[in-house]
Length: 303
Ligand code: GLU
Image 1: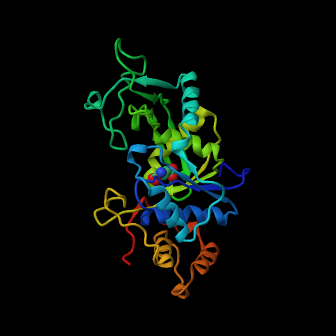
Image 2: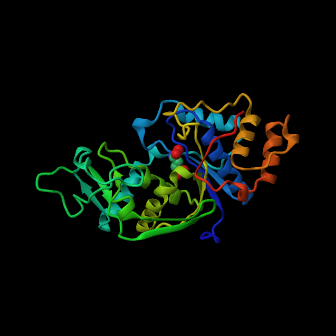
Image 3: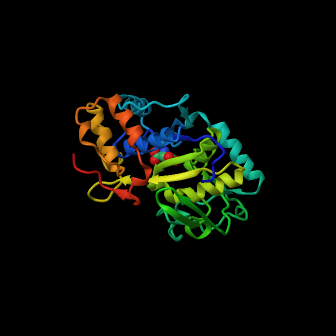
């Protein structure tokens, strides 16, 4: 625990690229119950920083789905699309500290690069020490240190990455003018005073990058808990791309119970005809984070 002196504040940060599916409901449920059980607050943030990938109406649809499932959050919803000036300010801080540099490389230029942990190209550092004469800056990158970053995840345990070897200098401001998720999420978590980050384990390998940015920007550290991610029979993460169906709000308790089971929680027989209020009252009492399976992916049980 690194945050013992600050009051617990958690969050759920969906990207409005489509309707909320089962996997996101499980992440929302886990982060909400963990925050409430710790007597903390639970905030909501719409991660619409990648505007070309966002779908009109999806943010509102997500809010309605969460409401229909009985979630309640603290304070106003934060929208990343309205925070560009703040991200720019953070980028300026990094530039002034000599930790961000302009990059002229196109995707084609990086075609021969080694593969990073996330499957993308491991940036070979072409522009790290200045642009070639006549080259035009397309993006801004973070200059990573040649060191390991380790943390202890509350579910997944010890996790360590050597940024220079595993990830390389990553993008802060993209060639299309949008800020990268890695920068936005770090600035937002700090500005919202988030002490505990509970989210899907697909983001475990983003965490060292985020810790490096937090440190570079002088933000306080957070505690992390990465939940198993829901995958389909082919092992693919449920998402709009894999055609995951929208969460069923017609039977809210059944949907929540499926997410509850997915998170390894014990299901009582008496909840068969429970109301939404019954479910939440009961879930807050019975939630045990120790029961969350220590694995990065999991298939939901058949309905
Ligand atoms: N917006 C991200 C997603 O929907 C989550 C980011 C986070 O929780 O840090 O996958």
